[in-house]
Length: 307
Image (cartoon, rainbow, N blue to C red):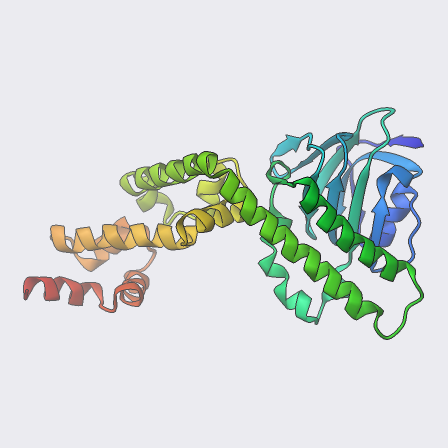
């Protein structure tokens, strides 16, 4: 195996699975989809890569480090890391250690305009960070490998009228299993995850009571995810699993409750309340408040007075 040690600060743009296979010295049979074994690669590349396609890496042994998002992760045996188009990933193999990793690579064009393409936003784990890998049992790992093998066979066989549909069905099946296994992971790590939720609630309360709300406006899910050192998608999925509500809904719920307190407990005008809550225009606050409560702020104050 030839090791290519590139300048890690230089970004290599890979626009399709073919280019990935070419870089690593792997055989490619289909320009839009490939299932490859990295221990068969002619080259071990230390590089920073900009992916413009989807990739699912199943690691069989520890053999290198990967960084995307803000974290570096030496991920364990039996873990999956998923990478979506637009992500920049730094990969560094251990010198002299042959990687054992199976990777599914598929192009955006493969799924564009298909039922699977319309569902890709469902698979939010393609935007997770490297330290948010999926850790699997041996049985779960075998399930993923079975799906990958079916895709590999179809990708390497002669193309017929059924090839694309069968490949897409098996990719979707693999991604659905990943969703199931992530749900299991959220559940089995509930104690640790509860700490993330408690931190979210504390940070949200602090934000609402600080000048940041007036100065910077409504907080985003990313704001709280960053403070938990998690990607927004992983953070949002974790919160939804633990509470049954989206992180955005929880944030907006706090805004509504604070707005109600100001409307009923102060003599502030609607304009003043809107400004204090970080809304740029009072009309936006009024529409938001009515959508959530069924009443405008003025109607809500008047109905309380009349009770």
